[in-house]
Image 1 (cartoon, rainbow, N blue to C red):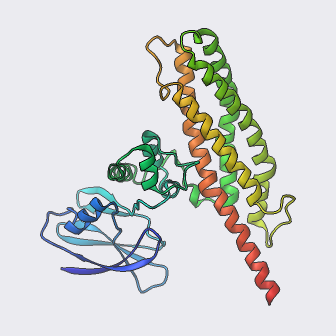
Image 2: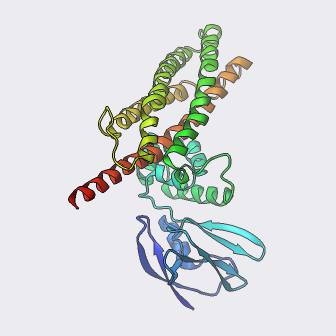
Image 3: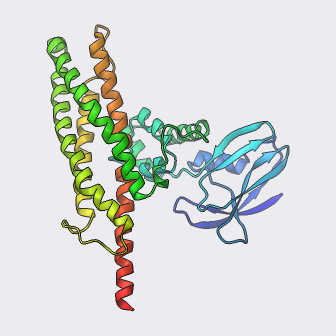
Length: 339
């Protein structure tokens, strides 16, 4: 049996493909889909309905017959392979040339895979997946397999991770302040005391604790100033952009100017985190470590994870959205002036 579909590639454009069904067990991927999986991309089968704004998706096979679901949302985000016996897996497009930040934006649970593999999806979120794997000395096909397994595992359960891309500018700015800024304001003073105490007690046994303390103090000071700039300058500008009918006259010109400074400071924070992780063997305590030492390492590890989520939501979601909003308002003003 031959069935034609129009599918979205990594750039979101539609194109025609032909899927041929061969004899196979119910729920088993076709030979073509298996070949595409080995090639580094699992394509989403989806057929455009004649009604505008509707996508008809081939969801999978159950006992040799097609199941079809109609989705009112474009572009296609995911297709679930199902059978009478329940959910079996997930087919999504993961392109090796997709920026890692975009992959996390599409499905936040993928951040768990990148955290484990030490792939930087926040400050390094603009790197294509293939290049990010190469930099870490990782096999790209192995990483793709882990991402697909993660997608299947966390399908329908993104909590406690949030879909930042679905939020408005004001909602996302509020979420970052109430979640990540609040966490830092409470946790940084605690870690400041812990890193100082551990250095005083164990500094002679492990000289690297001096590097830990220096890197943390610098990070703490920079983050304190960074949060104030976002809360008092950048985030109010972003909220104003969302509600404005025309481009506001900001004191600093374009919103892109403070964003550029925030991204620079994010890079600096990423370098401090690299020192903290490298000086503690990836936050692994030595056998002789006391409870305070272990508490410090656990806190630093949690800090790194939160900052990765925090910076990702800003660099890869909030900031690009704000710049696009400002550009859209400027475009509307030009059209109105021309008319």
